[in-house]
Length: 293
Image (cartoon, rainbow, N blue to C red; front, side, top):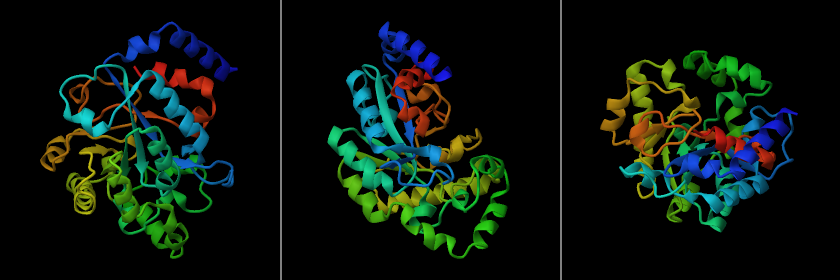
């Protein structure tokens, strides 16, 4: 019933032209994580809500392109003026291999640019994310996120086979370069260890981002977006000068909304998460856009 009411309200708002008025001259940034064929993974796999099925991904982007201008996040971040019309940018977090296998072909098919924010430890060292450890529920993961990162890393060390099991989950540098050569996909930093930067001492947080950004500049210099995606959306306001000194222009969080220029919220720009439930219910799509204020 709640889904029906949300969808009905949002459809009426969209039909009245509300979305075009709301986002005129503004950018709506969309956040995806994994793009999967759908149905092949056990329902018990942790964080499955981050998956979007390929048909849903294609439908969402096709629908957005009908009323919004697709833009590369890096191009928008480099401009001081608002976009000429309602626009959208596609982003991915983490660096999953399925971004290359399943999302990239759809981006090429539709000619839509995207930015992938890489947690470079997963790419460079093939280090899985701690929440992929077997047996964790999504609720337990949310609680454990607040543990010190040193405690989390110690748990990973207790699982010697863990890295082997999940080594193929992540993009390789070869895949990253292939995507970059297309001219459609660029890459930005998401922290090397995907640690919550708010939980680290200042210098350790800076070094984590610096290491990530340095690897990107070394390995794929021709396809960079100089924008940080805060891991878990946990922004902190004392790193702006350090990030700017690295050559980064902005940072994105996880708060809903839209922006005309980066100056509105340079170090914590809004992004709108697209999860499995939202993607699989077409009637809810106007609801997401209506809430991106």
